[in-house]
Length: 445
Image 1: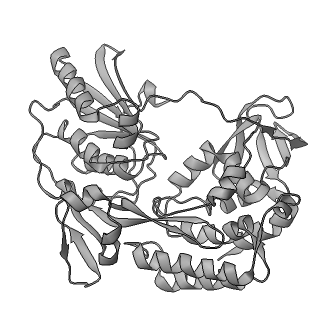
Image 2: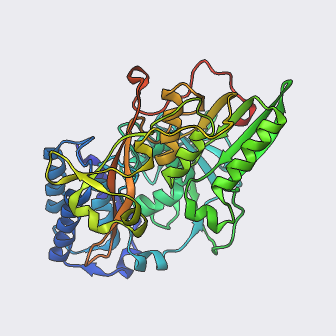
Image 3: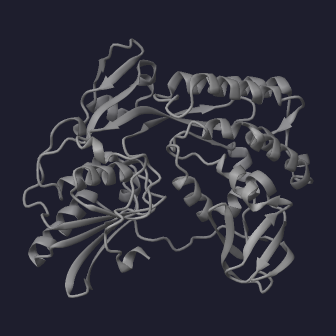
């Protein structure tokens, strides 16, 4: 069940030579203390810890990890040992990061090829070196077959649910960053490459890069395009993070009011909302967006629950505006003041035309909530590819921060379990799936 840990630890000695010697070694006792604190923090605060693994499996995985601490370890070795314990919770908001000390010293490298993972295989989608042309298949990396590489790396990616949509998506976006962190760490990579029927061994050398400001897509944008003989509006939202939007000069509610006013004035009857790569943020923004397309009063959430002991970690906005109520379980309380728990009327002159929502393996949290609501009420057709976020629920709200005292690894645990209000139970699936009967749009390519 835990072969990936053995694989990772075996290859550490091969790939990390020269890197680990420069890192501080932590005693076995210090490492076991950090492991215990990690476990207790998850048990204490996570609001839905055993949704995708039973309690016995959780405890067994920590016991097996402790047995592997037979010598002093560096931070990197310990991280590789314990990160899968966090990822196995299958919650995208539960994350374990390296120490700030480690991250500050970490070098940035770039690789001359870009890879795509699918169906346990790895293919080259772009390349600047002749030995590995675009379209080649990578058969192995540093002696590991490609399917072993994929299965190992997926264990280190936190994502919602039993499906792998989010894990594969983030692996495709950040393959070498994840690979070097877990299996290769800043060293050259030995590849076996298949191009047509020719096999070739290639050493792939990274280049050191200096951090610089790079072009970033706008967080919020809109346009009106002619598709066929029809004018269609496209609203692209890369984030529902209100603080991030404001930092980029965007007043979300004002933007929506202006945008939907333009749709009414222009008599546009077709709207595409692009939520690809939207990892969520403030769910109140997602609720506000839904109020602009809903045709009737709606309720967004069925319940929000957290442990009573988590309340002291509430940030000031929640303390000021939300209140809680006890449940039958004395350790659990419910949020009662959240706007999404009440029926909400659509905004005046809300959009009544056709709506499509584009999603992909980067759509999660509040963005996935919005897509699930659109699908469940049949207000919009879902297009693109399957979401990272699950259909019925997620854990977030606010994150509780724990710093492991010796290695200084950083644990973030979500405090609130969100359950969506989904009256059409027969439409619910594990993740949010695109409509197989919808006509594909050019902008989904």
